[in-house]
Image (cartoon, rainbow over all chains, first blue to last red; front, side, top):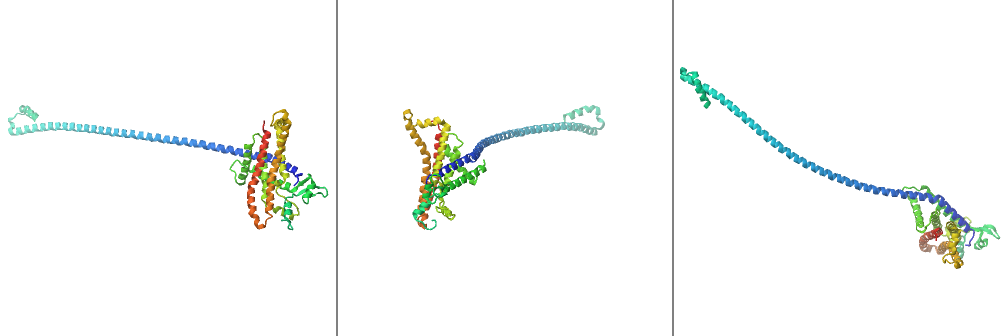
Length: 156
Length: 274
């Protein structure tokens, strides 16, 4: 256990090992670990960004949904109002049409009544004259009593 | 225990003797047969087991992390890669908290020190008799497998760090700046320059010695206790061996960590401007 050349030998071995470590071991490992650190950092940043984007997208989707729901409600309201309006209009139109048709029919009936009355009157006059002719035979001058009978028929 | 039942003292000294190869004044270039011969070889001898095991563990460390360096991806790490990256991040954290300068060396230095010392210390978990027995069968007399319980190894690393401190201090502050720092700290007065110089030089030289001796002391003490425990009857060994080994999970990791952190802190001082 005395101090001897081993001391020098150990110093040389020490120097060689440190040199080898410095040359071939330390640099590649440090580089790889630094790169990995960078990659992890980038990954984390990306994740943060993605999360923020997702949040934004969610908000946007919600906003869009809300807007479309409102739009749908508005459209529905408008449609309901319009439908009511249309029903009302149709009802009014139908009523007007009906009334018009009734009025037409009435006036047609009226004119037919008038016509029938005229025809009836003419026939009554002719019948009356015929009857009177038969009763009176020749005693009645057609020309003379025509006027009278016509006036009679008029009064019917 | 090796061979024909040795006494406890023999057993302990046998376990604490490194496999030393060197120039013996009488036997020439040879392996030392015992502590006496190893001492006689003086400085120009080498502890083959310490060197061998420390280089093996160092290569294991480099091989593992070279594997990581080759397979590392910027994607999701898996399995072994994950574990190695954790160690890497750990040593990176040491630098981030204790080092204020900017250097390409400091990261690899901390990683190498921590992992290498950790692996060397970890050899202590292997059964205390396993490798000496194998070595004995192969005809090798001594085998201490924990390099960090040999002061040569720990002081070697300490002085390695020391040389780096000196080198970077001079490079960053200039020779003048570094000398001035030694001469005018802590008392900024010309009359106290010699006093400052003595003080600062002691502070400087104590750094590597404390690094090396702290690690050596912890590991050596642990090893001695493991050896003592293994002297107990075989049925009683595990009662003490297991708790001590579990306790060493802490010591092994902590000593590796302390060595690495202190080295980084000392290096940080070399990069700082006063």
